[in-house]
Image 1 (cartoon, rainbow, N blue to C red):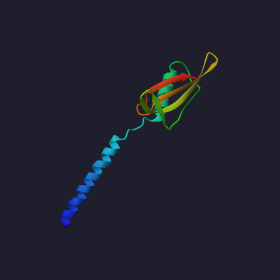
Image 2: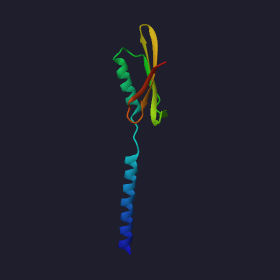
Image 3: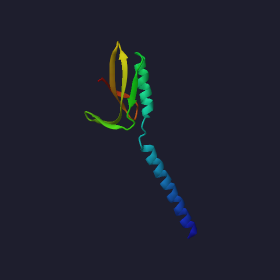
Image 4: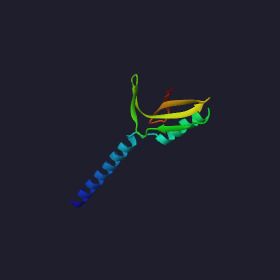
Length: 104
């Protein structure tokens, strides 16, 4: 009886470990918001200096036509030709790709 109980416990442990591993691997990992902001700032710096930047660390749902994803929302401020320019951007939270940039 003891060998059977030991074998059942061992098999249960292996099955539980496998299930936890599969659930962890299937969960989609978010791209770090700080890295998204660094990449956007780098792109804007190619056109000139920037004065400020921000990004919300919490994702928001974004739907465009039939596609839905999670996005980070952020912004960039700069002076160009003595005029203050403000931009807002949306970036995919899973890939870090910028989806939309608009001047405010």
